[in-house]
Length: 82
Image 1 (tube, helix red, strand yellow):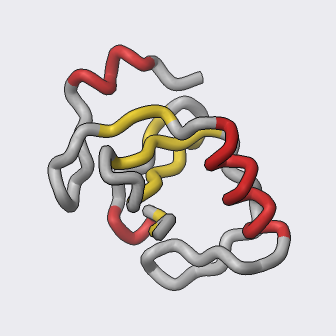
Image 2 (cartoon, rainbow, N blue to C red):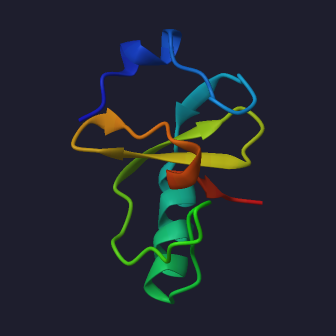
């Protein structure tokens, strides 16, 4: 599980916006799209595994998955939501 205290020091590596924990509705919609093979990360790789936890940029455009409690803050691994 992600330690939410890290939100005080983490920011979007692209825009430097604040990040927040992705809400259940965002994850549910994203995972439905992943199941339908409609989601690629910024590197162009199709996602096949559901995302259990993630951080979202303040503007709601960029999603960074959290894997084993560690946020993956690489631009290529991020997912554009809008």
